[in-house]
Image (tube, rainbow over all chains, first blue to last red; front, side, top):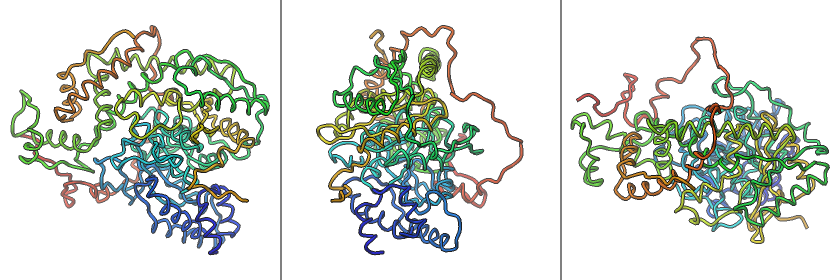
Amino acid sequence: MTRLRQGYGAQAGGQGARALAKQVADGATTAVAACEAHLDRIMAVEPSIGAFITVVAERALDRARSLDAARARGEALGPLHGVPVALKDNICTAGVPTTASSKILRGFVPPYDATVVQRLEAAGAIIVGKTNLDEFAMGSSTENSSLGPTKNPWDVTRTPGGSSGGSAAAGAARMVSLALGSDTGGSIRQPAALCGVVGLKPTYGRVSRYGLMAFASSLDQIGPFALSAEDAGVMFQAIGGHDTHDATSSSEPMPDVLPALTGEVRGLRVGVPRAFLGEGVAAVVSSAFDEALQVLSARGAVLVDVDLPHAGFGIPVYYLIATAEASSNLARYDGVRYGHRAPLGNRLRQRYGGPPKREDAKAEDDELREMYERTRSEGFGAEVKRRIMLGTYVLSAGYYDAYYLKAQQVRTLLRRDYEHAFETVDVVATPTTPTPAFKLGEKTSDPIQMYLNDIFTVSANLTGLPAISVPCGFSPERLPIGFQLTGRMFDETTLLRAADAYQRDTSFHTEAPTPFGVPKPS
Amino acid sequence: MGLVSTLTQQDVKRIAALARLDLTPDELDLFTRQLGDILTYVEQIRTLDTSGVPPTSHVLNRPVDRDDVPQPALSRADLLRNAPDAAPEAGLFKVPRVIG
C-alpha cells in the first residue's frame, strides 16, 4: 500500500476519476490511500499555484474512512466512490467556510450544502477543498480574488483564466482529477482552455443552482472540470437533473451519458461560423482550431459553414444583462445577516473624510444606511463595484429601455441565430478563447480588454445552450489551447460524444505541466 | 462607433448611492472614466434593428408551481449563526437604529 501511495503521490489526480473509482471498487487501493495521495499532492504543489482557498484534510480523511467502511460492509458503491474533488468557493458547503473570494463573506460558514454537493457526496466523492475564483465569479483571470490570484500551472507568471481559475488549475496540476466550477459568461470553459483541461457548461436549468452564490440568475450554471470528456460525463451525470429547491431547474430527464460515448461521429454536422472567427484571434489558436476540425472530419464528421450574425454583439449584451442581474443579486450583501459588517462611528468618518452629503439626510437615521454603504464599500473589490454600478445604471429609470431591454431583445436575436444554425448542424465549433493564457497584470487596467476574453463563450450563457471546451493544442510557449463545441438545448451527450471521440485520436488532454507533470512511463 | 458616453461624476455618485456604495474620490475618478468607456463600448447594440423582437429575460419560460405546503427549513439557530449581531434568544438580527 505504501508503494501505491508513492506512485499516487506523483500522479494523484493524473490517472483520472473513473480509473480511480474502479481501483477503489476493485480493492486495488483504498479511499484513504487515494485521499492521502491527493492531499500530499496538494501540499507539494499549492505553494506555487494557490488554487485552494480552503483545504479540508481532516474532513476528507474522515469521509474516506467511512467510504472504505461502507465498501467493507458490502454496500453498493456510487460512480465516484473514493474520488477526491474540489469545489469552487461560491458553492455552499455546510460547515466549511465559503467566501466567493470576497472580503464581504470572510468567515461565512454556510448552514447548508448546495444540491450539487449533496449529489457528489451521494455518488461517493470526497470533497478535499474550496478553490479560488474571481470575486463573486466576476472576472476572466482569477486576479479579482480578494485573496490574490491563482497561477497557471503551465506558466506561473500567467493567469489560469477565470472566474473558476482555482478549479481549472487544480485539475491541470493534477491535485484533483475532478472539480466543479460555475459559468456565467465562460467561467468554466475559458479557464479550462487556458489550463488544458476539459470544462463543460451544461444547458441552463440542467444542474441545480441551489447553494450557488448567484451572480446572474438567468445565466449561471455549475459544471465539471475534468481531465477527459469521459470523466466530465461521469461528474455531469452525478450532479445533473431536476431539483425542487431550484425553481429554474428543468424537468428534462438526464440522459445516460457513458453508453453514448461510442467514439462515433460519422455524419455529425459541425457548424463553423467563419465570419465570427477572424478578428482578434491569435494565429496559434486559429491553427490549433483548424487542426481540431480536421481530426473530427477524419473521423467522419461533416464541416458546414454557418452564420451567426449577432454573435459579435455577445459581449455588450452579456455585460448589460449580467451586470443588471448582479446588481440585484448582490444587494443581499448588506452586513445584516451574514458576513462583514462595517463598524460605525467617528473613527470611520476620519478615515473616509465623512459620508457623502445628502440634502435629505437626518443625522439620526443615517446609521443603517451608513452601515450598508460602509459594509459594501469595504467588502467589495473594484470589479464587483463596477459591475454593480453598471447594472444599477442600466436598470434605472430613463435608461432601462435603451440598454437593458435592448440587450434582452438582442439576446432573442442571438437565440434565433443558433436555432437557425441547428437546422443544418448538430454542434457549432469555435476556439474557446482568442488567445492562450495571458500574463498576470496584463489586462487588469483595462476592463474591456479583460471582457474580450469571453467573446466566444458568452453566447452559450445568453442562449442557455450547453457548451464544452476541449484541449486541442499548445502554443510554442507550451501554453494550452482549447476548442469549444456548443450544442442544442439539453444535448450535452452529443458534446461529450464528440469530445470523447476527438480525445481517442489526440493526447493533448493527457499532457500535464512540468515540474508538476505526471512522470511519463519509460 | 457612434455615441460616446457622457457619464459624469454626478451620475456616478447618484448610481453609487442607489447601490449603497460609498466611493472614495480616487474611486469616483477611476469608475467615472471606466464606466464611461464601458457604456461607450456597449452603445454598439443600439445600431441593431430590434423592432418587433420580444425580449428574452429567461431561456426556460414556463410556470413553476408547487402546493402551498410547508417544507422542512433551516433552524433559527442555523440562520442566526453567521449574524454579525443578533439576539438569538429572541430569534432576531440586530441592526443600527432605523427610525430617528
